[in-house]
Length: 336
Ligand code: NAD
Ligand code: TYD
Image (cartoon, rainbow, N blue to C red; front, side):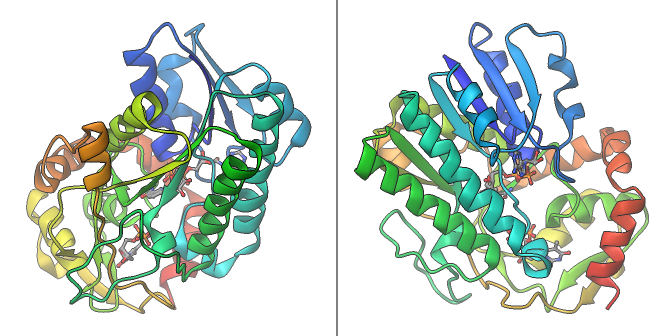
């Protein structure tokens, strides 16, 4: 396969490229990434001399560049996005630019060059939010009801992907997955933020009372799910992907991390809640399990332990990200 991966220097994209090149060393991967604050080419330093891997710095809204790159591949795996809810609240415009317009440009070029598969990575946040007390879960049949600029822009991109399947016959697939965690995740997100702050002797900021619920998916399980959909998924279909968490509150996640690091619960700091904070996400992944045979490999607790160890062993990696620019972001976000 010749694959164009977009956003391959980000968290999930870089895990996917490393996973793919290890499993399929004869395939070719082109990675198109703009290197925003979230992109880190160091994640792929092991592939620098791999003749089956090529990095191209560029923007998915660059029509000419996208045209040229898509003409060279048969498959597109589209991760590139602005991905952090808090940043979408303080600056929504770039979310529409990259997530909606960027996706549309990729789709147009994919039609033009007749790619065999366009796989779009999306989120469960497009379905809105459940109540903490709800026992129901999001599934492929749930109506869209996004509530943040981030999830609204991802919903827009999902609609475009489906429209290109129906209108132009582009062989698309979509995965809507839950919150990922694991190696190479930017420390702006809850789990790496908690681990790295604790390792630095700093407190962990918890929004509101910490009683929101997320469905946690280990990034390697997610990469395996994308692989499964690329190989066995049906064009035009959507697959929901989630983890093995059972309704765990944010506060309980933090307490687990504190325990794994041998720290004290006094390190928890309750801070101002996020505006429009979605209470709960929970995902029913029975379709991908029953139809394609995918399921997560380990429990949340097992993967969390592995994740905590990774951040302990890769302090140089995240300390470089927690630079002066990060400190300014952190102050704007938390010192209010
Ligand atoms: P990330 O923010 O870590 O990485 C995004 C990457 O895209 C970065 O490398 C960035 O430089 C690149 N990028 C941004 N704008 C670009 C542009 N205009 N052109 C080219 N490259 C650009 O994101 P992530 O956590 O790896 O998420 C990847 C995808 O998965 C996103 O589409 C996101 O919506 C989706 N997703 C993520 C999660 C999660 O928990 N992280 C959950 C569900 C869905
Ligand atoms: P996050 O990792 O930003 O992912 P998302 O908003 O896409 O779910 O946040 C996960 C949960 O953790 C969410 O309920 C918000 C909460 N949270 C905090 O309590 N404190 C923080 O500093 C951050 C970043 C998130």
